[in-house]
Image (cartoon, rainbow, N blue to C red; front, side, top):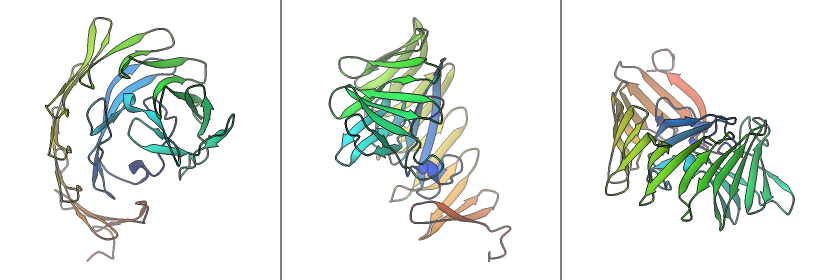
Length: 296
């Protein structure tokens, strides 16, 4: 969730199923995690963004990107939805007064993460990491406002009157200033030093991120999916009518075909692998056509 260890992992997220590089083979989603900055702790905070080709609920870096600043808790009829920096959601039952609700995502973290009501919001604790995230504010959409570490240190994410991220402060008072314009993060500074700058197109899509000497540029299709990005190496993606990635080029070239039970993946070297999934997009079998005797 932007901290070095996640406070809440997403139930049913794309992370639960095998994928290689940026493509999730079960769904055809292109997932691009991008690391921008670190603020030392404890607890240390990682400022990052994640593009998902099917995502349109991002805010501070454009609709197709989630980020450290997009982390939040939302109150819904079916429970409290806690969103991580990568956009994955964990759903907790509504806690009663003074009670604690557990999130039961599938897998090894099941039942570990706890949510409780606090003044003006919720606290989410992961006993496995010792981190406690606080989501506070007015209304039913509560931003992440602080993270407590197991040793007592705290990271604060402060917001302006309009709800925009304004400052990130660690336990010893080191601060990052966050500048926003037109509902987007445009710069991050430490005092007078520019650490990161972000540029957007007219549609509000992030087209350039310059962070500590690294420059990454992005291009999009009309649906807001990244079709190309460049960090010194060029990466390109093509999609089918259902929004699934069918071709990727760059350091590794892939062609994907989607079938009823799985996905066929071929690379430029002629390797052919089929990934079979269950109804929950969990990988159940991987067939390497160069090794498996069932291959024809």
